[in-house]
Length: 294
Ligand code: NAP
Image (cartoon, rainbow, N blue to C red; front, side):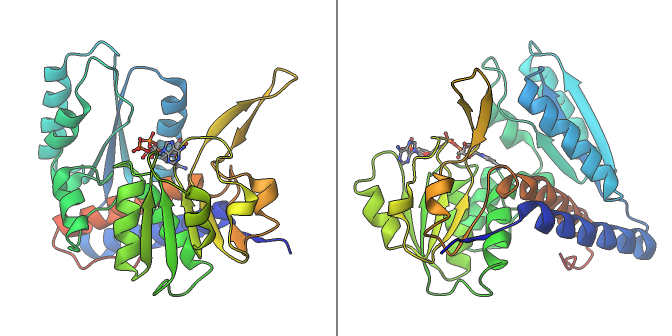
């Protein structure tokens, strides 16, 4: 048996097209152009790539994109002043501070300074708390993407056994909350969990968000399970080149799973597409418009 490959690129492209349609509608009907501000501190090469892609895709969906680049040595007070001005700016409906931040800055203080109504990364404690309480909230983009990918395979996740490996605020924890919302039965595993292989083997849905290349082996996977691989790891090859690898040993797992995401081309493209969804949702909520149908 070979698993169905979940095409994150195609699903993200379709989602971006739906967002663009809704953006055109709110522009036409309410005169509203949703706007996303991205703040990049320093010049980490991976962050540069992400920020460029966010900018292009935001504009591609018909939204306004504002980029703010600050030097790595920026004073925390200056970054907080920029966030305060973006909080007040009526053209900005989403604010994203690209992580990781340089060590000289306190990420928690910075994130807490973002207006929760504009917190399109879903990391502000108000949004994290609302999500954990089962209330409507702006949810982190990568977990949202994971749910959409899973639902491309299963119309309903109700009663399914899911395992989320990783408990970060960015991925694992919010993903658990979204799965509970879908009425899945969720196990959350982390670096201190015992018998990870056995816990995984009883799961219909496997989410790997660890940051350890190919940790999850093929013989851990229940036959027919759906596997969503969040990990992005760069592996050094013998010839001096590198290749991207997920947290799942894809070549093994693809022979056992029912459906699986590739790396790259699985979860990655969904993250930015869901950022556009969150920006559109935030803009509509701020302006008292009905929730858009994306
Ligand atoms: P993180 O903050 O480093 O969290 C990693 C989690 O994995 C922690 O909860 C840790 O447990 C757990 N863990 C570490 N070693 C483990 C092990 N041997 N067995 C079980 N659990 C273990 O990472 P993150 O931000 O969640 O990101 C995870 C991965 O996803 C990374 O590869 C990252 O690059 C990728 N990512 C991809 C996207 C995307 O758009 N595709 C977005 C975000 C992240 P403890 O809590 O016990 O330390």
